[in-house]
Image (cartoon, rainbow, N blue to C red; front, top):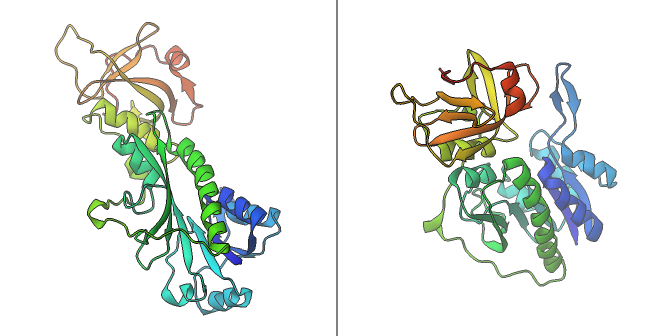
Length: 315
């Protein structure tokens, strides 16, 4: 069976490696090189780099136009396998594949259809997530499911760490499903329950800006959900301040002079650490980074900022 693999980010690389090692991948379809850095130097996608290392031919069309369709047709692929490619496939393109197409999605579909399911699961405080292999459909993430693996969440995952874990788990599941299809024994297709469907959207840089009126538990989840991008951030005396690691403080602090306001630093010392009042509860900051400075643990940060108590973050 001849496979065309479509994917772009690092999350797709373990799946490509598994498939190229065990089955016949005739080409990898990925995004064109993107300019990065101050010099705007063209940089290949993670999938392109991996494919070249695996000696898999690479296709990088800017759009799936007639030229791209002809290039794929010449490869005579049987099955399209997709992991985070980032483009919509039209019927004319999908018709090139006699065995159709399958997609790996990092959620327990029909939950979190859309582009940021890992971030969404962390933000929601879910106790589990997972990966799903589904049949490709004309609407994003609505295809019949072929296989799922459930993964427990422990409340310390970041989007970065969970993406790495799910990419490996998903790669193994995708290889098994693809192998079963190649052997002529595809898994039973199960329609998704539309009554349980939920959706997520693209994450924007603005999402990382913290509102200290929110509960401490939500802010802590945002710190993890927006790691490694766009990072949860606030301001300190007018300068941007990134929060890299936080925990919900188990107790409360009482001030002698009136009730604290959200964003106020209640304590910043060797005994308590950096404690900040939120709309509900207290947040302890364990690692942070001031604009144009290097990341620091809270003890090191205090050495340069002994006057933190009473300062209001984000004001």
